[in-house]
Picture (cartoon, helix red, strand yellow):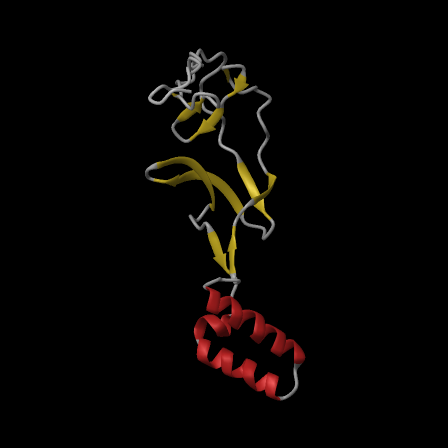
Length: 156
C-alpha cells in the first residue's frame, strides 16, 4: 500500500434500537458471604455497574478481630506459636508476610453475586445492530457502536 493512504473503512452501522427502552426493574442479589447486594454506578465518570451491600459496602474486611484491633500483638502471637512448633502458624505467617510484602490484602472480600434474589423479568432486552443491547446506569448501549440511548419513562 502506498504511503499516506489508508484502507477504506467500512461504514459504521446506523443504530435503530428495536424494543422497550425503559430501565429493567431493580434486581437484588446474594453474595456467597450471605450479604444482600444491589447494582450501583461504578463511579461518577464510569457508565458501568458495581455490586454493593444495602449499607453501601463493596467489600468486607475479613481480618481476625485481634489483627484489626492490635496488629502488633496478633503478629507477636503468631511468632510465639511458630516458636512453640505450630506448623499451621508458620504457614499462615509465611503466606501473610509474603502477601503483605507484595501489597496484597488477603483479608478483603469483594462482594460478587452468587444468586439472584428477585424475580427476573421475562422481558427481552432491546436489540440494536442485530445484537441485544446492554443495560448501563445511563441507558441502553448498542454493543456494536457503543452508542448510548437514555432510558425512556415507563408509560402505565
